[in-house]
Image 1 (cartoon, rainbow, N blue to C red):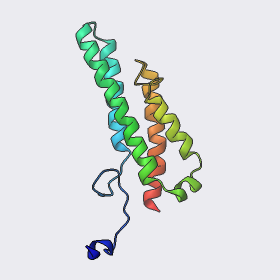
Image 2 (cartoon, rainbow, N blue to C red; image 1 turned 90 degrees about the vertical axis):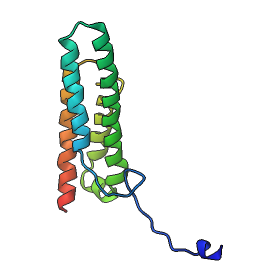
Image 3 (cartoon, one colour; image 1 turned 180 degrees about the vertical axis):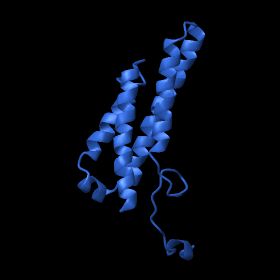
Image 4 (cartoon, rainbow, N blue to C red; image 1 turned 60 degrees about the vertical axis):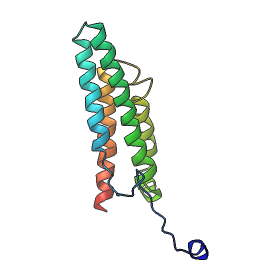
Length: 133
């Protein structure tokens, strides 16, 4: 019993339950590209069953975009990153809103999907600069 009380512990951080240390904004981008492609497919299809299914998938993919961005924001980026890139908080906020209910999750607007992809690209640029440092 005493040996468990006095065992050394390590503090770790990760985007999942196993601290793999793998982070990449490409995960958010792939989901956002899927959202954009689904929006185009819905626009070209009049079948109500197909449209319903596609919209549900688009909403799920939009939620995954938000998830992947939040993982970067909360688990990867650290205070020194936010100091060096003060626009980072705003970029992540704007990107997650573009993937949310007023963006690609709630609308079938290809322009919103393009805006989302552009924001993800800006975040990715900062991400890769931090990896070089």
